[in-house]
Image (cartoon, rainbow, N blue to C red; front, side, top):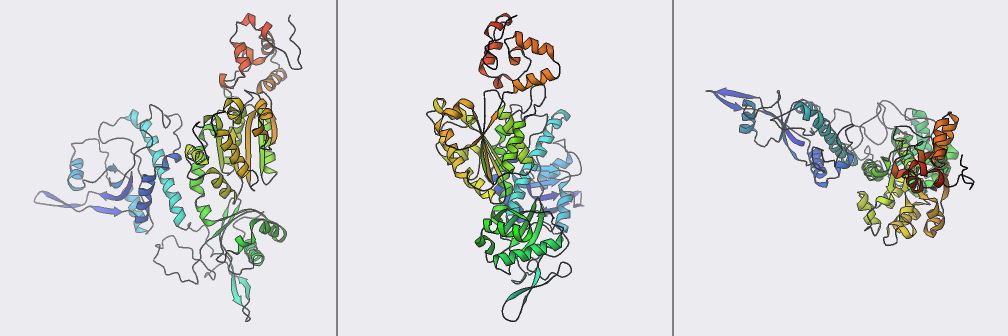
Length: 567
């Protein structure tokens, strides 16, 4: 429930025993109300819902509300008591004087009143956990955290839209960066001494926290419009004003425009929001600018994008997270909670970080743990701030016939190739495609899914800052010409059971090793390594289904091709 206004229903005057209401009403900011109505219509906000730990998950049968949850933009009332009686005087007051109230709560009026007093846009968003009658502590324990999660998801979707149309608040007390531009008398623009404190002498205006939007007359000479975002890897941060001023001078010199101005610097690596009214930086081009900055300032230009693309980034990241759920939540630990260290993970990360772009194929036998490793890789890179799109190929609908169908299946707002290419302009992105072998060769000859995914790889494979990791079983990768044509470097993933057996020997687990031998020469057949059935190679699942006394004769060959000797 997003409030378009908040009632405080207690004011009034009694005359001859009759109450004449004089309530206080706080209207919400018009722009926020419009955004809330759009978010409610679009129904994309549920992708931001973070499930409550140890509770029912969205889509479960016992989840308290169907997905997507219903939303409304309507009036709410702030009251001073818990309302649990539909026959109370308070209920009667609300019905008689505030009939369009949809929700009652207790804190919103104070927050909205404070925002209005400071002339700061504000809105109250409430997740509804219960009705005003028949409340129970048991239901509250389940429903209240879920309602809070829904409200937070709706609020963050609104904030992403708000950020597309409004400047970020100031993050420092100094004026915008930039040397004062002077004229040398011959019409040439020169840099005077920079002014970093006191009255701002550069283009741009940072609004004070209490200053209302639109109430200040910003003349054409002081108005600034951020058009470019630079992602810089450097040994200094946003607080180093001297280095930033020097960097701004270099940008002006390299692009041949004295009107370039660093308006704001943000951490992570170092993001520079730049006003470039002549589009001089874009005309120079990212590669040429990268080489020039490396030589002139000893900094690395990781990426450069338009401000429009940067403003859309938060919404795109949320879309990518929602689209990647199937693989990113894949179990990365054994049933007992033990995590197996995989050196191949560091190999993949090293390859990715060592190049401007890469395409790598992770190949291994069934049960080697490819999905678990890719899930770990995706989550690791996402925690490092990378946009990640992770796709489980075997879960795609067979009726997908083109990239637009893939886009719709993943719930993205634009084709994945265009989205990732645009996001890669600012910094590195990761595309993960798991189980391509499920769509290869004779396994999937009637659908276009494999061709669609491989075309996606081809479109992005040579793009700077795009890194692609695929997975496939060994046989399909070696024998399907379409997979071989990708031209990916391969990383082999050995079966975890072989490594587990080595660990067991190193730890002195002699009895488990002996049990494995008696069960047919393999640790998995005896239960020495207890992988989930879906992660076990087919031949070992079959061995485990045999009677114990039959396993030694059907144990197969050991590594090296020799049959196990019998006692």
